[in-house]
Every structure is written in C-alpha cells, then in structure tokens.
Amino acid sequence: MTKKLSEAVLPPYTLDEPNENAKIDEIPLLVNILLSENSDVQSLIAERLLAMALHDQDGGQSISQLFLNPLIIILKSKDEDHSQTACEALSKLIRKSQNIQKAVTKSGFAEMASFALIEEGAPQHVQTNILIVILDLITSGADIRTMGVLLPVLEKLVQEKDSQKQEITMKASIIQTILTSKGITGYSTSSEIQELKKKNEESKRHMEEQKRLNEEQKQQIIDLEHQFEEAKPKTGDVAFSINVPTGSYTKKDGEYTYTSTAAQFKVFPIKPVITEGIYKCEFKGTFNTGCDWIGVMKAGHVIPFGSHANQHPYAKDSMFFYNGYINYYF
Image (tube, rainbow, N blue to C red; front, side):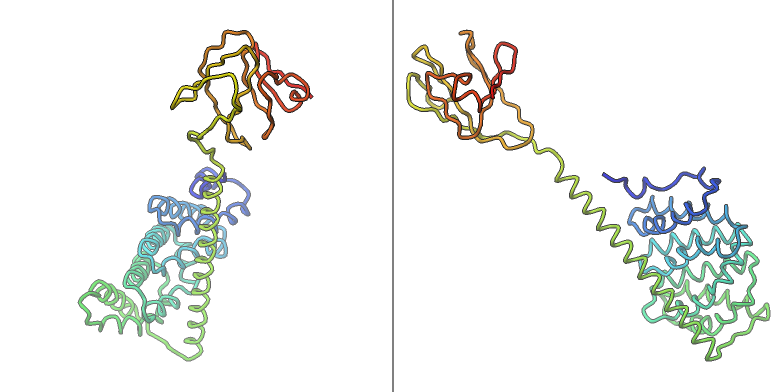
C-alpha cells in the first residue's frame, strides 16, 4: 500500500538540503494536498510552501514564482476554505519578505486581480481575499506603481449597493483612497486590456489543470484503497457437510456424530472443497484406537470403508496427520 499524501510531506529540515530539484518536484504534490478537504492538512501544506518560499527568497524571482504561483491560483478557488488558506499563506509571505512583495507585484498580480474582482459569477470570498492580499501589499511597503490598473475596478466595487457586499465595498474604498493619495492613476489602453485578458485565461487554464491532476490523484487513492480492501483476508465460518456411504456406523440425529459398529478403517470426507486461502478446522472425538488420523485429499477422491489412505491406489491423492507426523505418498 502506498503512503497517504499527507505522509509524503517532507519535514522542515529538508529545506537546507542542496537538491533544489527535489524541492521543485515537491510543489505539485503540495498543491494536490492543499486542494484536499482536510483543513489540518491544508494548514500544514500552506506552512510548508510559506517556509520554502521564505527559505529560497534570495534565489531570484523565478524561484519565488514557483512557490507563489500555486497560492495565487488557489486564491481564486471557488472552494472558500481553499481560497482562505491561500490568502493566509500569501499574507504571511508578503508581510515577512520584501523579495516576496517584489515577486508578487512583478508577476502581474494586479492585472489578474483587476479581472478576477469583476469577473461574472466571481464568489464573494474570492473578491474579499484578493482585496486582503492587495491591502497587505500596500501596507507592507510594496511598489504600488503597477496597481493603477485596479482603480477602474475599485471604483465599480465602491459603488456597489448590495448590503451583503459591505466588506468588499469597504476594503475597495480603503485601497482606492490609498492609491489616489499616493498619486497613482488608472490606465486602460486596448493593448493592456487584451494582455490582461490573456493572463486571466492563462490563470484559468492553470487552475483547471490543477483540478484535473487533483481528481486523478483522488481516483488513484480510491483505486488503491479498493485494492487494499480486496486483498484483506476474508474471515468467518464456513458451512460444511459430511458425505459418507452407508455402512457399519450409526449417526446421532441433528448432529455430525458418528459411531462405528465394526472394526474397520473408515474415511469421512468433509465438504466444501478448499481451493485457496487459510482455513482452521476443529475436530472433537474419541481418538483412542491408535489408528485415528485426519488429513486432506484430492477433490472427488473416494476411499471406501475398509481401506486406508496409505494404501494403493488411494495414497497418491491423500495426505494425513498421524502420530505426530504428516504422511504423504506419491
């Protein structure tokens, strides 16, 4: 059985290992786990991505993006818990590292946010969490010159009259006030809009790909769990019957109790036929003749009363336990 995904998360001390490829290869796995429904695991993975990003924050913008892109994509998730987890992780990164702030602002985050905030059908939790990240960027001292693209969008959000969107309206108003007070102005040329649309579509494709990979991973886990259940040994009582010819014995009604009335060998076959597996068979009887034995024989094999399993031609298809030894013949 393979390890569970949560068991595959590397411990913190691996951050200092020189193998950067190993950490890069770990990111898709972390994202898949982050998309799970286990809130405890989500928190663990978010912390892992956060620690990795902070540890490698001096490795350049491309390295930072490896850790930031999954969180930015998940920030727009329709699942509120997933989006909230990504929001908290991004906020911690932004507050703790200027290099991370630069990486976020240079990644086109403001352009992505401008579309996501007014996208038709955008969940309120996504809008709220994006605004929280923007506020963290501004209040942490990030370069806000790229945020002019947000002003037309913020203007629309500020004019929102829906009472259920008061938190969104309030945050949009705060961001708008700060940006305008810093002399930031909006822009909306057609080429810029097309570029923003292109980036937004790319973000959507990334999200769909992550969802597909996650579904494949979930199906693999389900298949493995099913195989594991199928491989478990089956336990329980097995119904049996005793098939013997008529002869010199008596049988007690309602029981499998036989009493021999003649001094001769008797073989009592027990069914069903055993094909494979481990079976336990218990016998109770009076074994005091010195010629008592139990064993197994080939299915369909018949040994008539008066004959023994060690005699020709019956011996080659029989194996029996007698006097402390297992006896078999060929």
